[in-house]
Length: 154
Image (cartoon, rainbow, N blue to C red; front, side, top):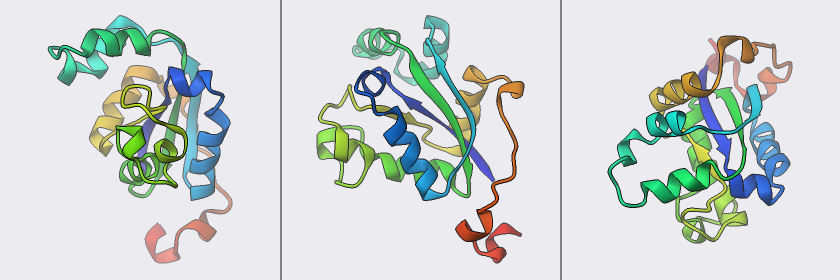
């Protein structure tokens, strides 16, 4: 099973959407293996957004991401990163499809409520920036046979 990272960004925390966001992933059948509230640091953000570091919007992005704690989650499932990216919708929230998290709750490109790893590889990097091994939990999801066919679990 693939693991990936989701952040409820400062605006999502401020707007009280943590439970709604978590609920959607649980209802989808994803498996929560890590959860915590964290204040992001300059060092973490420099590494997290290294691909944006030289762009003019980076200082504002960094300022926004340290303005309030975020809720960091690690989800597990088949094709978890792609599945979650589909569920959250496009970056510019007012263009996101209804039924997605951004489509249902967002209007902004920057204040778009949520971050999700763009790939399994990015998820592993982000996971290592925010979580220690002892903060991740492997536990048996009892309804897994109602989420995946037996052939998918082999």
